[in-house]
Length: 122
Image 1 (cartoon, rainbow, N blue to C red):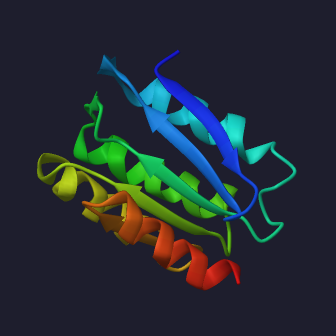
Image 2: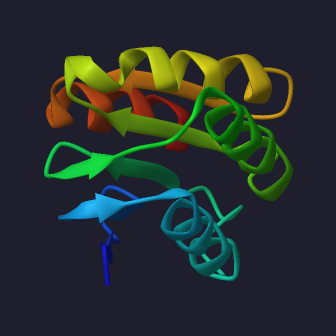
Image 3: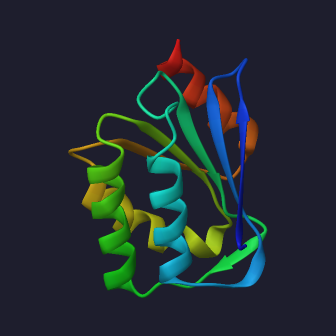
């Protein structure tokens, strides 16, 4: 599985970790579908997606579609991405698609992402 999931009950964060070399559109959709069904979503939990260990490869159209789905699946949710610099253009396309439905922010440091999510949770 190219993604792993964990939960920090104290910080109220759902953590999605990407791993592996071949992470494509289907795997990006799979993590959203998996997390969407978690009862913690919408219960004050933020979502932290750490993409530093993987190699996410999405076309501009796929990135925009993923962003649109993020907004639909996680409406009103705070989502932080921890990303390498190479993925910043892809994240910008996702943010454009999601902006009206969910708060999405990119970070290079996981602690900064956690602080930002914590500000929303509580």
